[in-house]
Length: 69
Image 1 (cartoon, rainbow, N blue to C red):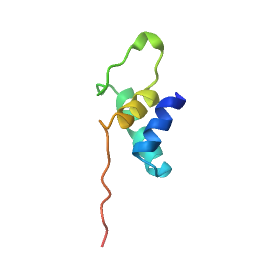
Image 2 (image 1 turned 135 degrees about the vertical axis):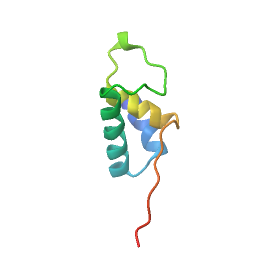
Image 3 (image 1 turned 90 degrees about the vertical axis):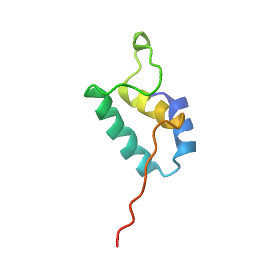
């Protein structure tokens, strides 16, 4: 995992629990064949979690909290 991507993603989503869930779900989608929303150079050996964190850091991926009644 790239520490720079993690630090940038934490700035966008300070709640670490939400960040973990969002990044892991997106990494799973990428592993199953979804296209990345950021440019990726596969020759550098970037893994799916790094791509997910980069998407979050660049504001390409966000979340919504549903209010329960």
